Length: 321
Image (cartoon, rainbow, N blue to C red; front, side, top):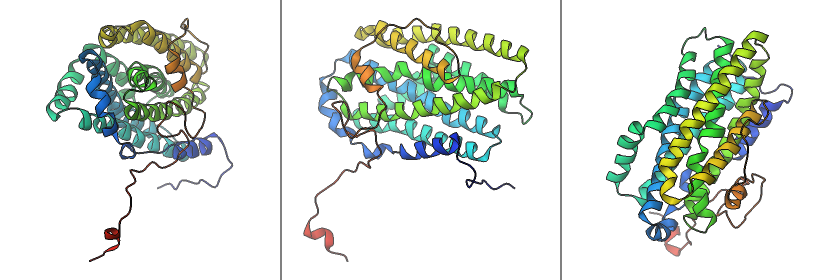
C-alpha cells in the first residue's frame, strides 16, 4: 500500500490540481430550459447539426472517462499525478452527462435513444477516430506496457482532448455567440476550458516520458505521431462535412480543427504542422480562457462562481413539521 504525500515541494502537479479544482462544475448549475424558445426557432438542418455534434461528443467523452484516463492513470507512478488524472476522468463523466442534460430538455427520449444508442455506435467517421485512439489506450492493459506505449497513449489522449473534440464544440459555440442556445453554449464552453487544461497536463506528462526514450524510439514515435495526425485529420474532414455541409460552415470548422491540431502539437512540444487560416471571431472569443466574471458570451463566468437556480424565499419555507 502507498500513501500519497502532498506535503512535498510545489511543482506543476500541485498547480494543475488546484486549477482543475478551481474549474469544477456540474451540469445542474445550468438551466437548459432557457434555451427552449431558441431551440424552437432553429431550422431542421440546424437542429441536426447541433444534436449530432453533441451526440458525437458524448461518445468521445464516455470513451475518455472509461478507457483513456483510467489506463493512463494505471501507468502513472507519481501518486499526485495519478490524483490529477483521476479528477480529470471524473470530469469527463460530468462532460458526458452534460450532453444528456441538454438532450433531456430539448428532445423526446426516443430521439435521444436513437442518437446515442444507434447513431453514435454506427457513424463510420466517429467510430474510426474513437478506435484509432482506443488502439493506443488498449496497449496499456498490460502492467508491463513499455515507456514507448505509455508515451503514445498520452499522445493519443492529447489528440483527442485538444484536437478531435473541437469539430463538435464549434456549433454550440457558434450559436451561443449569436445569442442562440446560450445556456447550452455555456456548458460547452466549460467543457472546452476543462479539455484545454487536460491537454496541457497530459502533454507535459508525455514530454517527460519522451525524454526517457532512446533516440531511435523518439524518431519512431515522431513518425507514428505525424502519421496518426494526418490520418485523424483526413477522417475529421469527412466527419465535419457530414455534420456541417447542411449549415454551410464546413470550411470554417476545418480551419478551427487545424488550429486545434497545432495546439495539440504545442502541448506535446512540437511546432505547428497545419497551415492556419482565420476562423469566425465568435469562436475565437470562446477560446479566450482568461478568468473573467462575465462577457457577452457567458451566462456564467470563467472564474468558479457557483451558479444556482435561486428561488425567492417565502414564509412557508420556514415552517418545519
